[in-house]
Length: 390
Image (cartoon, rainbow, N blue to C red; front, side):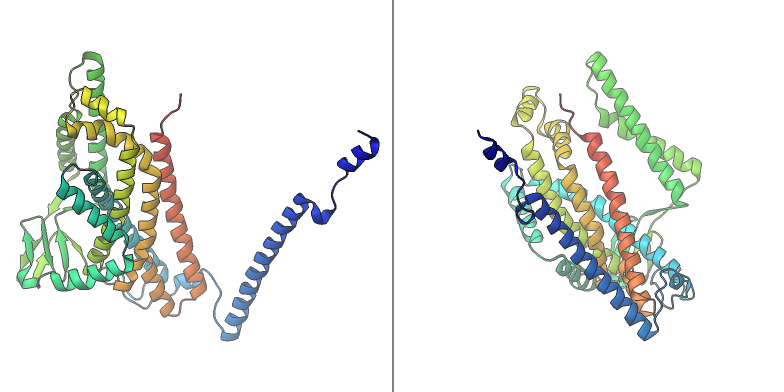
């Protein structure tokens, strides 16, 4: 190869034909457009607030009196907006956490039912999933509130009573609950879970050492319940059951109609998506695992509980965690039926002359913090359950 040919091949292309230069120029151009749009919006916001004499302070409005009530709470109109936001934040957490637990249980049951050998169970669960997944969540919220809670539930005089467990009527629902401080109830729950975990580890160690059937559930659940009862008595907790006296219901913990309707809609909608994830995760478990369980003469329930589901849940943790995030964010739709969650409280605050941009910016930041915290928990669980490659 001649020197002229070598020089020609090693010569760099002109800038307008250099791929790296073009890539950098494109990225810088996009960044400049984004900065320009953001700057225009910020300047427009500043000019409009100055022209109308509105405050742009992101914190002072939190100390101003709210001027609106929050139903079914101890919040007073004279309290600051900060307390209203905190009340809405805890209402969002109550709705989201309860919805996550119920949707996970219901979705897992329906997902298992999707693979049932029973034609009725398999067909009914499939119809449930296909119907619920293909309708808007907002429509389910309105349906649960207007059609179920306000029209299908009985009047207070004819309340549905499930003994001392629950009372349902058009004014809301009251269910059996505990009496005492929340931290004491949490301590009881943690003590029971820790004891059940320790007992389960002990039974598995006995099985590994002697070959005696572990029967972890038969040992762990009764011992855990016994420990819970002892800690409950030691901490002085009590119980309160709902009772009806004419049109009034006393005792228990009360769920307002809007909370109950929002909870129903979120659980029904999210469980249909979790059910499909559970079904796909079960089908992703190698068939050889089920065949090995059959070879060990395990019953269908034992095969599902001890072999298939533990492996399926390892596969399904990331997408199920994504559904948890969706449920938490979708809880904001409860504002359309006037449940005072975070978004509804922010809407009421802006209607009472709180500055809109700071208020809704704070709302976005709170939802971002909740989502990041939930994602962190899901990622920790996912790493803990991840299959270790050899």
